[in-house]
Amino acid sequence: MGITKERYQRLKKEFGSLASWALWDKACENPKSRENVGSMEWASDEDALIKKVKTKFVFVAFNGSSLHDGKTGHGQNVYWSNFHSSYRYGRDHKLRYAILGSIAEGSYITDLIKNDKSKTAKERVNKYKKNRALLEKHVDTLKKEIELLCGVKKPCLIALGHDTEKFLKQTLGKEGYKVFYLPHYSATTPKFDDYRKLLKEEILEKNK
Image 1 (cartoon, one colour):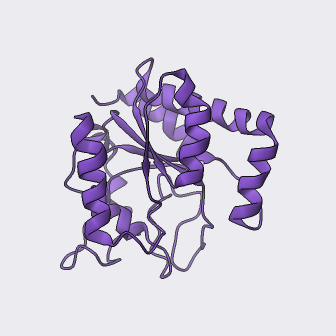
Image 2 (tube, rainbow, N blue to C red):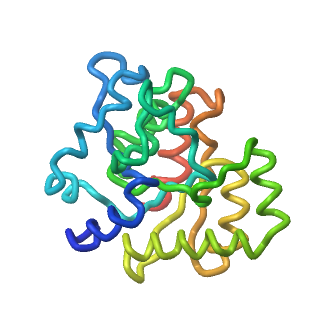
């Protein structure tokens, strides 16, 4: 199932600087390379983009990474550029390799926590473990985001990383959302082919 142009524009206005779609320009030769991963050409034709959008799955990471403005990534003024950084130490290309060509291509990708300025991942996670009210605030924002995308239908949530999985199961999992764990693509393991296989066989094929 896709999305209407009206819903797309509302989603873009409210979350387009923080989220993206599982769509990328392909690498010309080696699909595991970083080539074109930071290109936003795929988003230049919005009518074509809307036709590619799917709503069965939503990928959710924990918190947005640094933007690497100007040199190797995109700033928040570039819509849908999250998860599309060509930063040389980034691994967005690993996520691209896992998703492109699968039934999850065209899915929505976002973060559970928006605009958190904590210095370390550990500090960030501990903050939300201790402050349930703050976590619920971010969960409510995510629910609004998902409802803009899917309406009343609940998509399958693919949690990128154990912390994301835990928080989603503690909250949206109790509201009828299916939550599936996938290692974060920034991790060095599993390797590219195993990562793609894990997504396909353990999540996508079981939820067609």
